[in-house]
Amino acid sequence: MFLSHTASRTGAPLILLHLLRAARTRFDCRLVLGEDGPLGSSFRAAVPTLVLPAHHDDGPDARPRKTLLAWLDRASLVYANSAFSHDLLKGVSLKCPLLSHVHELEMGLANRTVRVPCAGEQRFIAVSEAVRSNLIHQHAISPQAVTVSYGFAPPASGEPGPGVESLALAGTGRRPHIVGSIGTLWPYKGPDLFVALCQQVLADLGADPATPRFVWVGGAHEGPEWQKLSALIRDAGISGSIRLIPEVADVRPFLRQFDVFVSTAREDPFPLVVLEAAREGKPIVTFDSGGAVEFVGSTAGVVVHRYDIPQMSRQVTALLRDPGRRARYGAVAMARVRSRFGAEAGVARLVQLIDDLM
Image (cartoon, rainbow, N blue to C red; front, top):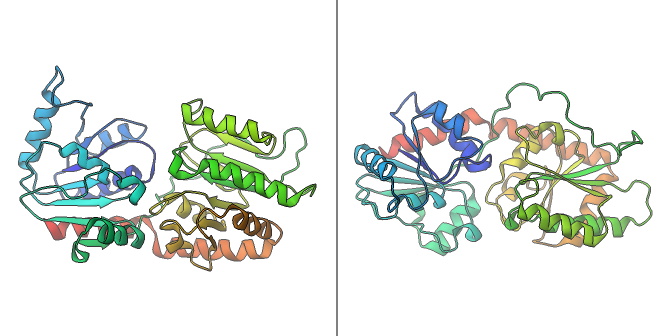
């Protein structure tokens, strides 16, 4: 039985979806969701799926809870896709082994249950060495109980559709350099740091006619985080240099217009969007505050000291002025994601880990 706290179009649920499509040919699979979302219909098409509403244990309709308990009673193994999904097991006496796929670092694990009592063994899959180290040193998990299995780039489904807007300057047809990022507007993703980076680059370049444009793709349009970030941009006086684009199903048309991909996340265990950017041959600039550094290294982009916006600005500006260096980093990134982070091999590793514990 599989657990996911959400069906959002984010990294952990995307990996789970591709895993389920492979696992259903080997196992009798069931999925329990903590909440529905954009991937809900795809999950339901893949395997029998139960959405467990909030307060499922004391609401007027007890059927979801009874279904959950019945599925758990028959389960040979429970696969929890994130530590957040452990919440679905509250008040449950687990009679089988538990495989916890941890997609979180310490910000995500704050006040969360990492260990879950169960009759069988609990093992952990960490999405990066950074996550494995955090589980061992901050949560006293035995090193022998944690296996690293990196995320993978979700397979691209054909060519992106037509009609995606150009990021050229409106009314001029001139295409500026584009510095872009993609992600939700959750604070740990650092959208405010992206705004700070834009301010710093503009200050560093002054009246340079080659001033780049900054684009953030993702987040709920007009939601509270969107409004907060929009106000931050207005107050900084940089509305003409930065754009927010709501979440889209296919980010490739935007990635292909980026000249540099930046991750300003305060903490990101192993961001799949970095792999997606690499697949499009984009150089990557990231902080050293998560798992992205394990992909980027020194040859697929630039790693900047944690939250050092002036240093990140200098590195981004240098890349924008050096197309040859951008191309070299992008070529290495593309080759690396193709050779080591493909979906087929990534899914096979996860299926094997499931098999090992059953």
